[in-house]
Amino acid sequence: MNKYLNNKWIKGKTKFDIKPLPEEYLFTDTFIIPLNAILDNNIGVETILYLVDTTDFIYELSKVKPFKFYTKIGVAHTSYGSLCFIFFIVEDPIIENKIFYLCENTFDPNNEVMLKPFYDMDNQTHLHLFLLNKDFEQQKFFEFENVFNFKSSLDMVKEAARYDPIKDFNLAKKEYGEKYKLEDLLGKDFIL
Image (cartoon, rainbow, N blue to C red):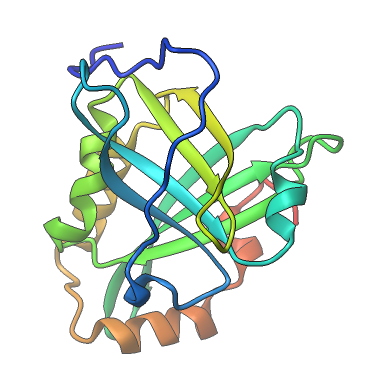
């Protein structure tokens, strides 16, 4: 693995004091957001993922064992420009390739600010995921070896969208939601 930030957590089990997010982030019951944080002063700033679910489902999700976490990145073309989508998936612990949890984020693939956190994560040896309830209390903390290949996937998406820039992000998202079925975007990798 050729990563520049070795952010492997070596301090054992821990519970972090999580600060609530600003109100503008709280627009849906469940979401995943990348944020910069310092988990270990010896390592410094890294990019982590918060998975926030304001419903009681977060307690069920935190009990999933084994917790298999995947991402799927792609591009979707609309008449308002091409969108990048990232699916965050937790596999069902009993039925292989069946989705237990899915969260979707969409981005303008030509907006470097939107994509920067994922490029930053790609330069880390590990990905840290926090499961948080509605009060931003940590339910689980996961560490995954970083095999997610954000950079190569995003570079392919950017290339595919290079000649089809977003003209109106909100209209592109609306058309994307109407035009594409989740099953089609997931392909044969996962079942709902």
